[in-house]
Amino acid sequence: ASKGNAMHYLARRWGLAMDRILVAGDSGNDADMLRSGAQAVVVANHSSELRQLKGRDGVYFAAASYADGILEGLRHHRFPPRSGK
Image 1 (tube, rainbow, N blue to C red):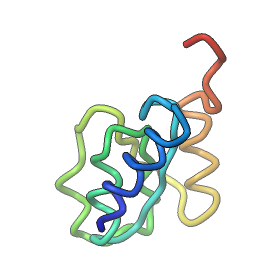
Image 2: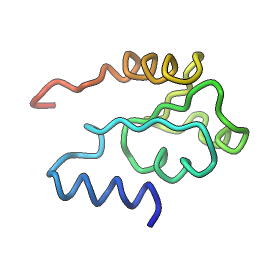
Image 3: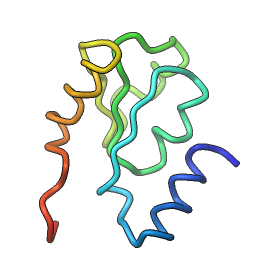
């Protein structure tokens, strides 16, 4: 199973809309998850394979690396979403 399929399974199991989930990645094996429909963060120290996701709705490319990039992405996506969204 791919990470993207796992995200869809968990969203269905927990009754969550994909846009209420945030995912972060830095390498090509994260691409499917980052395209899953969840709010996505690609950290600055990402591999070149993820450049293809630039401009895609819901995918934010952080200027910061590692955990700082994830925190930046949380702010960008205004996460966690407000209830009732």
